[in-house]
Every structure is written in structure tokens, then in C-alpha cells.
Image 1 (cartoon, rainbow, N blue to C red):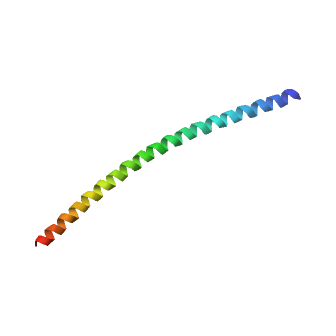
Image 2 (tube, rainbow, N blue to C red):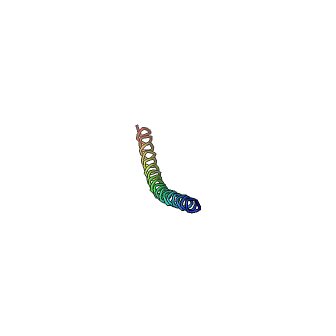
Length: 69
């Protein structure tokens, strides 16, 4: 009977270790994905600002051309 209890405890410990490893691996993957998304977000914000600047310049030029007419 005592062997059964010990074996059950060993199995539970093994299950907990497996779950812990799986959670750790998943956490590492999620952190990696988060870092990649943050990098992509930063790049997209930079591109948006560049586009906004270009559009503002084009609008200003169009206003200047309209004023000349």
C-alpha cells in the first residue's frame, strides 16, 4: 500500500515537472513573440511618421502652388 502511495506521489511530481517545463517553454515563446511585435510596432510607427511628414510637405507644396495661381 505504501509503495502505491509513493508511486502516486512520484507520478504527481513528474506531472508537475512536465507542466512546469511546458509553461516555461510557452512563456519563453510568448516573450519572444512580444519582442518581435514590439519591434514591428516601432518600425510601423516610424514608417507612419515618415509618411505623415511627406504628406504634410506635399500639402504645403500644393498650397504654395495654389497661392501662386
